[in-house]
Length: 239
Image 1 (cartoon, rainbow, N blue to C red):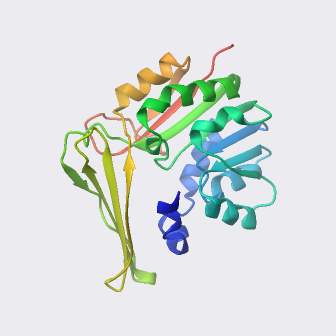
Image 2 (cartoon, helix red, strand yellow):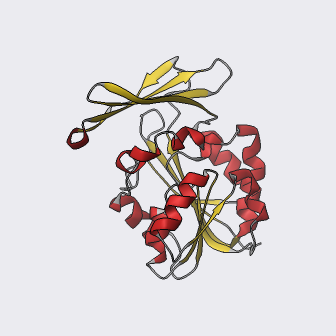
């Protein structure tokens, strides 16, 4: 997405690979099987999981992200593709599919049922479907919510983030990056989030069985009214 490409030079500092997240994925995704990373960004999780004996494919809509991923990792495969077009993937068989980093809310809410149907079709029986978003339960009734500033003292960078109600049931995700107090980047993109109960209901209707629901990748218990992440783990039953 161009929104992220616009600060690609600082992307690695702002969104680095987190070892705890990698360990979580390694623990919950089937071993030694084909895995699909939806919204892979610069490919770090996909790349590192390939080193665990899995065969990984990473997709992202942003050509710049895919280019960076291919520069760093030779073992996994990467492809430029929109989330809503994953049904076109060949071969269409994975034992694990994951979508983390609050990627799913970029997909219009009306398109989620078809997207989940594609995920279900791509998964082998018993396959795992993992996705993570911000917990929007306490946010969607607010006019705006400012997230804590991310500071990188060694680079004199500050990354500011805010959610603003667009009065149409969506959120505007506004960001700005400053270096030594001077603006480096500012931008805005629309998100189409849903509360946790809706995500759970949509996945149930798509045929998935819930295995676990956490507030973060440490396995912290999820509390609907508390600002946190929201990590869902589902299984595809026999088809």
